[in-house]
Image (cartoon, rainbow, N blue to C red; front, top):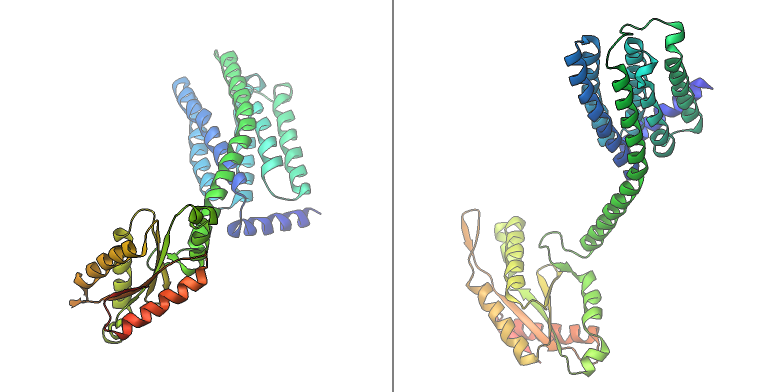
Length: 362
């Protein structure tokens, strides 16, 4: 049975490297930080009192907690938790041997039950054995004076030390109860942010940072409600294609092409109005949705973008490169997104046939 428990614990420790519960990590890291505070105070107290074995021991325990915190931070939760238990039991028994049970150092072991039982994911048998071991160590410390000699039985500030330990423990128990609520809220916020980040990334082109084709219909659905159009709102849709882009890829390489795509994307984003949307439609194609714009106004905006692109000089590998862009634009009618795309694409084709570097609207 013991061998089975140890094997299960070892497997759990290995699993912690790959996966980990965010709440457990936060709570145990907070517990480690909480434990370091009284350790620092005891280092100072025992140093002033001249009890060298104890201030050295507590100083080493602070370094020990740095190691356990590092393990927990790196998802070795079970291993870190077991090391915390070992340290707490050891230092409590060690301090009791020097100062006796009246110092109440055994109270600190009571702090182990809540985090280990609730937040460490391991087998029930392992938890039961650890808790029984901690309880036995507490009983040993309580009865220590009855059976074994105390190194410093007449320490003048022993009552004060016991009072401080009691206050520390009760304050820590209150904080442990609060930590779960704080950790859950923080964990929920973190998970929400991560989900939102993943959702946005799924709609974003990784090269240019523009929204991708997948998100175009989502945006269109959000900005072109039937009620808004019936009140007179107007939408225009444009598709732009970089002229002779394949030549740049063939002659200067795909890195040069990527740089041009990124630079043109910045020009388009900075050149539209704040309520307009720019998408990377695919390859060297871009889509722009212009809100509250008549076709003539959209044509003016697109001509401004076209001129900025054609006048720009892009440098790559010591070479100065130029490129132009052709736009096809149309007004979106009757909320038919696909029909608008076909009309804009047809206008783009006409622009390519008639000389490129122009805006064709209809």
